Length: 188
Image 1: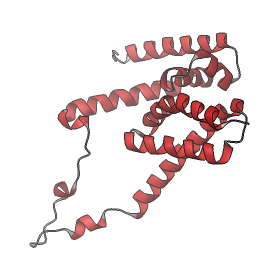
Image 2 (image 1 turned 180 degrees about the vertical axis):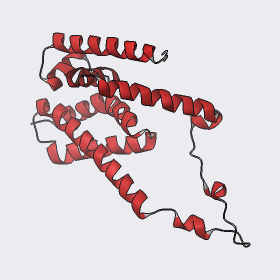
Image 3 (image 1 turned 180 degrees about the horizontal axis):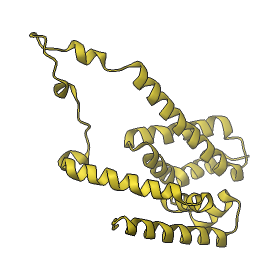
Image 4 (image 1 turned 135 degrees about the vertical axis):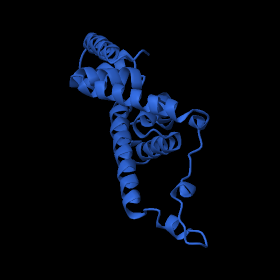
């Protein structure tokens, strides 16, 4: 059974990786922070009594479920609330200008040109596409090591294989991604 200090130490140790993973999935810092905080709360409330050794796998599952829940809520919200109030804001002359109703998001991308934003989005989509083409074990090892910032031992434990296998999977994944991206003219 995990003590309060052990649980606290565990949550501190996974906070940064969980945030990076969530940002990668949802592409929104505030939403990612909410997902991580919800996951940590659920772990503490429902599984704080479990042994410390079980916490990493439980937390990964909870984080995945919270991320899926976020996508479901977002999809439902989009389907139910389709900015009908924007159409009611037509001027006194009855004209409706869609461009006036669009709200830009606050963030660093505001200072970038539309072309730069589009290029970055296309490059990210190409990288994600190439990651999805990797064999399952290579993709899993690559994402855990380089996106979730897990060390070799943690990745090996999560994947249920040896540390040597993790290194091999990662090496092959990096090599395959480098070749595929180079063939597409992407230089990182």
